[in-house]
Each structure stands twice: as structure tokens, then as C-alpha cells.
Amino acid sequence: MSELQHHILSVLVENRPGVLARVASLFARRGFNIFSLAVAPAEEDTMSRITIVVDVERTPLEQIVKQLFKLVEVIKISELDPRQAVERELILATVRAGAADRGHVVELIQILEGKIVAVGSDAITVSLEGHPDKLDDFEDLIRPYGILELQRTGRIALPKLDRDVRTSAVKGNIG
Image (cartoon, rainbow, N blue to C red; front, side):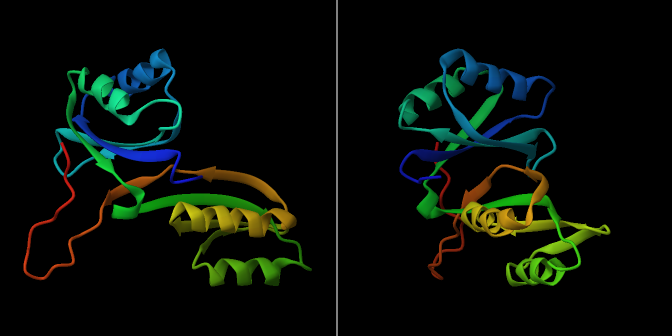
């Protein structure tokens, strides 16, 4: 996934039923492409944070932001430049791992700091967290063994923290 074609929006919304459906519907009606979508309660119980990775090649980011702000439940939108954000994603994958290959598969999982969460007679289910590029690499490495099932969460992201010791506030909030 190229950073030049995609951008990350962190959208703080009211934590109410139907809000995610309205956001997704807005994207569908306008023909905006969503590459990744993750939502969960935010720092306050009354709010949720929706992290949306959008295609900015076909639709200008400003247009997407304007349309989102039209939704009553949207409180704040932060644009996160991938170079100025901490991004993470989670993958769960069940990989074919017979007796002959099991050692190689386990070694790959350990090298990439994954966790084995279930073991069968000829397969292993693994959990791995990290930058989306790391997960892409992991997929490429396990594909030759045989991916039986795979699920990714979608990206989540927050602004990088300011490293200037003279300031104690977190920077990066836009909007």
C-alpha cells in the first residue's frame, strides 16, 4: 500500500448506534474508496474513534473531510500523515505447518515477534501485531507454506509524540 495514494483520518464521533453505518454510507454514496476501517471506543465513553485509510488519488482529501463534517455525530477529524503517525494492525493467520515445515514456520513467527495462539496436527494459528508493512512481509513469507485462513484488523493510528523535552503536551491534533 503506497503512502502516496493513501492517507489516514482519525475521526472522533459520538458513541451511538448507527454512526459507523452513516460514515460507511457516506463513503459509498460519494464513491470514496476505503482501504481500511477500524472503530472502537475512544478515551471517553461517549466517543468512538474511527480510523479510516482513504484513497486520495481518486478523491481529494479535502472533499472527504468536508463530507464527514456534514455528519452531526462527527466531533473532530485529525489528518494523520503516515510519516508523522504511529500505525499498527493485527493479523490472525492459520498456516499449514506439517511435521516437515513446522520448525521453519515457528522460526518465522519468532523472528517477527508473533505469537502462536493455537496448534493443530498440521496447522498453526498465529497472531502478529505491527506496522502494516511488517504484516505484508509476514503474509509473503508464510504464503509458500499455505495460508488456510487469514484476518486483518485494519489500521489504527495516532500522531507521533513530540520528542522535544521542553514541551510536555502531545502535538499532532489537527482540526
